[in-house]
Length: 130
Image (cartoon, rainbow, N blue to C red; front, side, top):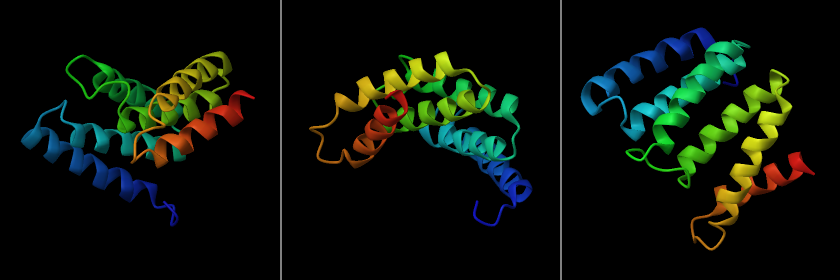
């Protein structure tokens, strides 16, 4: 990311996604993690439509009853990525609604001993919504 070689990053992430999807399955958390990272690369490339579509796909798979659930940190990070794309697209009401959901999820996990990332995203959402 720091070097900005997004074409190579996209190529490698697509390969990782293909391998993980073939070996672990399309809905496995690692496969979704690779897809989320690819959505971030699209966002950095200003390919907002591709990024939004992929973030939405990952989010729908994660929050699904068969997925890891909306309260899982990976799902929170997907919501934050989607919120960033929506903000860049000027979709502010949807951005705010998504960040309010993030805030609710993160507040529910503040007692978690491994909750540092929840605290970080909670503060980010609170700052944005203020």
